[in-house]
Amino acid sequence: MISITIKGLSKEAHRELKKRALTHGRSLNTEAIAVLEASTRSTPVDAQDFLRRLRAVRSKMKVKATAAQLDQFKREGRM
Image (cartoon, rainbow, N blue to C red):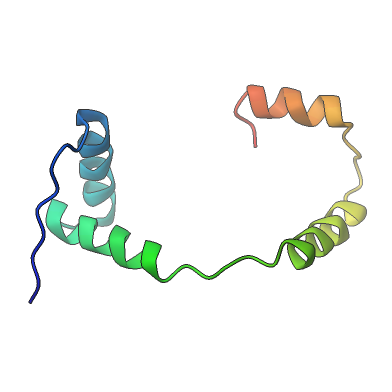
């Protein structure tokens, strides 16, 4: 088994990692491993495919939002 030491982790990052661990019912160490493993397994996103799928979903929406409305939603934390 390989071990690492994480130096210089901010208090905020430590606090958030502890919250995640509690939410997932894991120890802090196990949560850190899960986060690291998930981040190393991520797959590249095909931007064109993503946009195509996003546009398909958006075209099916009954209510159309303007760019200004979407920006406002983002500022309000609604997206």
